Length: 287
Figure 1 (spheres, rainbow, N blue to C red):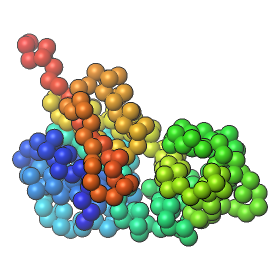
Figure 2 (cartoon, rainbow, N blue to C red):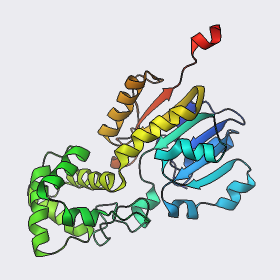
Figure 3 (spheres, rainbow, N blue to C red):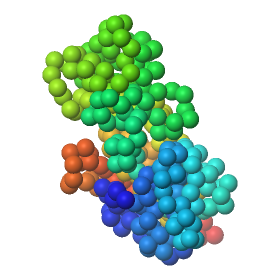
C-alpha cells in the first residue's frame, strides 16, 4: 500500500474521533482510509477509478465494519453520502494526486515516461473522452486554451501548433507521440514541460477543476459544525481554487500557511495541504 505524501499531517489536522464519520473522497490505494480506521473512525471511501475499487481488499474492509466503498465521482459527494446514510460527517479528505499504481500500472498514459502507452488518461474507463481524442480533434486555439488554462505552460502556443502539424502526418496515439511534439516545439527535452502538458490533458479529460469546485461545495453541506475538510493538491491552480473557495464561502482555513511536502520524489514536492473548518455558528449557541 502506497503511503500518501502528507498522510501524517492530514490525520493530525483532522483529529480523528472514535466512531466519528469521515469521507475519503479519493480512496486511491487506501492510505487515508486505513489510517482513519486505525484511529477508530468510520469511513465512506469513494473513488472514480473502478480498478482502484476492485483492487482494494474489500473483504478485509467489510470485516472491519468501519468502511463503505463506493465507485463514483466526488463531485457528487453530497448525493453519495446521503444515499449511503452517511452524514453529517466529522471530516472529509480530498487527495488530488494520482496513486502510484495509476502512474506505473494502469496503462492509461498518465506518465510521460511510459512512451508506448496509449494517450488515454481517463480516471473512469467508462467515459468516452480521451487525451488522444482531444489531441487529434481540437483546433490549435482550443489546444492552446487547454494547455495554458490547465497548466500555465509558457510554451503552450508552440506545443499546440506542433501537435496540429504532426497529426496531419500521423495520428497521435501513444505517449511518445506527444513527448516528441513537446521536444520539437521547445527545442529540448524538458521534463517539467512534459509534466505540465500531461497534467493539463488529464485535467481536461476528467473535468477535474469542475469536480473540485462541486466536491468542495458538497463537502461543506455534509460536514458537522466544527467539521474539517482536508485538501491535498499538486497543482498551483487547484491550491488557488481551495483558497478562493474558502474566502468566497467565508470558511476558515485552519492552516493560514500552507503545509507542504518537502521530501520524496521530485513530482511529490509540490504537494500542498489546506484544511477548511466549518466553524460553530455562535448565534445558534446563544439562542
